[in-house]
Image 1 (cartoon, rainbow, N blue to C red):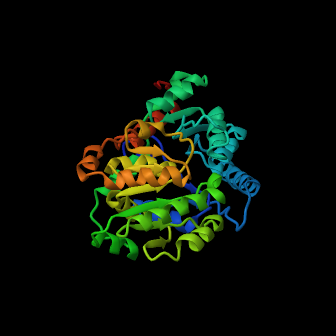
Image 2: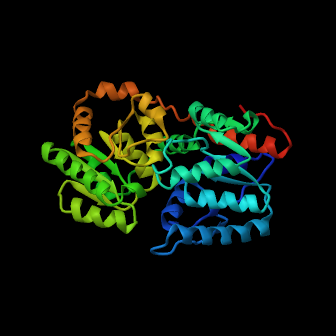
Image 3: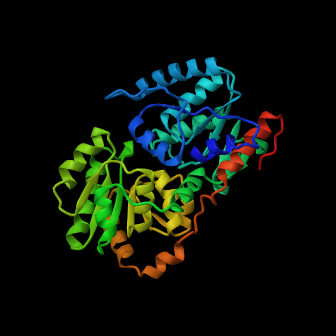
Length: 361
C-alpha cells in the first residue's frame, strides 16, 4: 500500500490518506515502513499470542469502528485477502463509508485453497465500491461476478511499484546470512512457506523435498526467512535447522528480500506476493500450492505449480537449477503484474470517485 499512500499524499492530489496498521506483526511492519519512508498514524494493536480468526475479527472490527467514527473518512482502502481486509471492509459497510479494494479480482476458484484468503477476497469484493484489478484476468473475474464495469479499474499491482523503487537503490544487505550467500559463489534457493493450508503434513513434505535437493546438490544453499507463527517456526527448526547449508533467518527487510529475489537461483514459495515480485528479476518460482489465484506468472513461464509433493518439487527444481543463465536473462523484466505506476492510477481513480466521477474499465 506504500505506493498508494504516497500517491494520495502527492502535492497536486485532492485527497489525504491516514495510514492504520492492524498490529498483527508490528515489528515486521515497522521495519518495512522505515525502508519505504512512511509512518503509521495509528496501530490497532490487535495481535495476541495464540489468537484465532474469531479474535482477529472482534478486535479488528472494534478498533477500526472506533477510528472510522472518530475520523469519518470518505473511503476505507484495503489491500489483499487477509482477515483484516474483510473485517475492515465490513466496518466500512456498517458505517456506510465507501470501500476501495486494492488487488481485487484474484480468484483460485476453490474456496478452501488458499484458506481462508479465497473467502476473504470474494467477500470483500461483494462489499467494495471500487475494485482495483492488478491484471486483465482479475478484471474479467470481477465482470463475470457482476461488478459494474465503471467500478473496476485495471491498475497493475502496487507491490511492483514498491519493488522497483527498492531495487533501484544501492544498499548493502543487513542479514548476515544473506551477506555470506551474496559474497559466495554457490547457488542458493530462497524458501518462504507460511500459508495456513500448508500447516502440518504439507510443510513437512515441502521441507523433505528441500533436504532431498540439498543431498543431491552438494554446493546448494537455502535461505529461509521463517514466519513467526509457531506452526511454521517449530517444524522449520526441527527439520531444516540441523542442516549446515540451511540458513534459517528472521523475516527479511524489504531491501534484503529484493536482493534475495534478484540473486537466488530459484524461489520455493507459497506466498502470493512473491509470485508477483520474482518476475521482475526473471527468477523462476516453484509455487508450493495446489492452485494459484495468480495464473499470469504460470502462463508467462516464470512460475510453476508443484504443491508440497517432493515427487513434483524435486525434479522441477533440478530442471531449473540446470538451466543456463541466458534463460533467466530472457525472462527478466517480463512482469505480468505491473509496470510501477499502479499507485498513481489507484490514487487518481479514488480522487475521481470522491469527486463524483465514475469511469472504470
